[in-house]
Image (tube, rainbow, N blue to C red):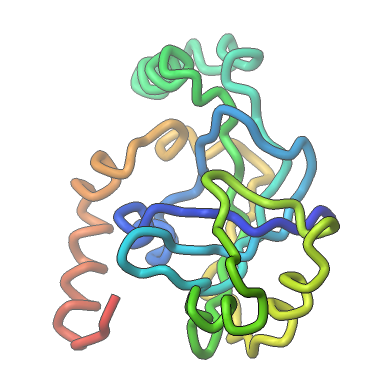
Length: 180
């Protein structure tokens, strides 16, 4: 399994954390199952955990599989038009017991710069060692992906945030005073 350091925008993190985002979308990605150390960019600037990802589904090559699912097909066509043709199954998420900050990485690797997309860790041994030293909690969720989640495929984060499931989970975490 390929291991990568994956940059992720913080505003897209909640649907992933809540387990309702079942696919990640990228123009380019590894063509195999992947273990990704998840780096939140922006103001967060920290590695929060590990996401296990399945082999990407090429939306442009599998479009005809969605013809009987009108809403799904419409969303798939939208992603294809933007160039985000890889739907990467999100299999699980495990959080670090304590996020690893960019400053902490830079203490060990001066001048370290996070990638815009991702780094393959085979060529970043020192970074890989730092990440492997982190204490990891249990998996928050596991998605089987033995079938396509048609109701979730090609849903944007803004669409996911409008779902009843997201609103209930967001309220729960907000009421619990959890700092997400």
